[in-house]
Length: 381
Ligand SMILES: Cc1cc2nc3c(=O)[nH]c(=O)nc-3n(C[C@H](O)[C@H](O)[C@H](O)COP(=O)(O)OP(=O)(O)OC[C@H]3O[C@@H](n4cnc5c(N)ncnc54)[C@H](O)[C@@H]3O)c2cc1C
Image (cartoon, rainbow, N blue to C red; front, side, top):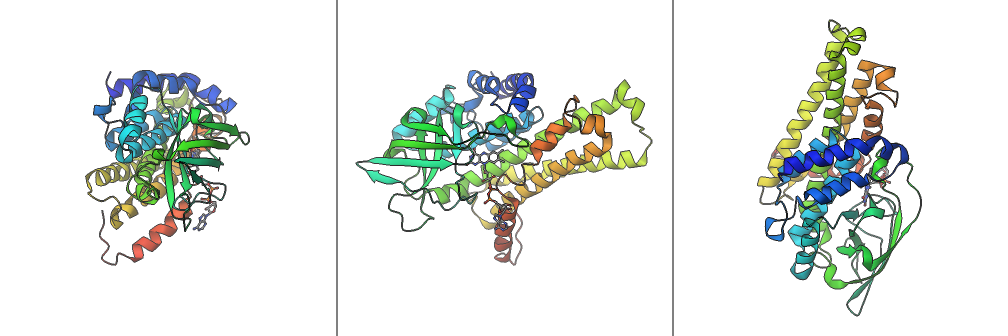
């Protein structure tokens, strides 16, 4: 099966359960099942480990396509893909072989545990661990874990055992049956309800050999791979969501029912339609350019690439949300604001409201201000 066929099967499964999953704030289990059965979970697993050997461009393409139908499913897929790429890039030996094979064979959905109770900062950790007899003693509370109760494994950040500073952070592979998982509360958000990203606590012992890339390696992994892939994947999910909404809107305006209320001779309506389209075109251009820049650079931590990757995230978060907001103005209450419209703008709006918060835009702007000061020659990536 080609990756495009696999994406289409997952999209069909997602379409069927999207309304109920959103309403009930529950994980899209049929879409995950389709990702397992089609091999899509293994998109970022190298071919020598049985996966599809997908590129960053492939991950972006598939995520945009899934986002057209359901932003939660697109986000679940993109975040899993980011975790897998980290394993493919940094895990070694037995761990690499075991984890990548399980993922390629559809048995392993990997959830991400990076956020801490203290908030979203990625590069330092308050989560302590002890190392005893080759075992990491794990007790990690996590305020928000996408699909955590459905995960077969987790990639977890924790302060390195005996670390002198909070910036010594490990990335640890944790299998579901190695730990106890206790929910710490429910999940009732405004949007992204089908990600079922409730809080949880993981406790248990994990072999120290499951530290990915060695002790203290996570800040380097984050800069070189985690952050670029997160921002590319999220931007792809947001763009897909806004593009899907726009497509449904345009089909509606051209339909017999739509033509009764929409005046194609209205300057205001045409200007608004053009404005939405330009938001999508520009975001798409930044997304594709950033994907190529990350794929082609020898060093993704190079300053101009870091600036670009962060800009993609904040730009896509703002523009995709603004695009759907503008679509709501175009069609008004019945199809813009009511939850039972087949245009699903209300859900897209709620889902996209999370974009600026999902790794805070303010944090990234502050970082980019500091990076920009270090580059008076303004070398654009
Ligand atoms: C749908 C969804 C799914 C998610 N899934 C996961 C997951 O699976 N695993 C996971 O680990 N995390 C996940 N996250 C968390 C995400 O990655 C972010 O870390 C998290 O959203 C940040 O949470 P916060 O707003 O509480 O924290 P913070 O980033 O600490 O922000 C709190 C507030 O402080 C402000 N702020 C922060 N820094 C600055 C600054 N320097 N200057 C000015 N203001 C600042 C922000 O603007 C914000 O208002 C998910 C988030 C969402 C929305």
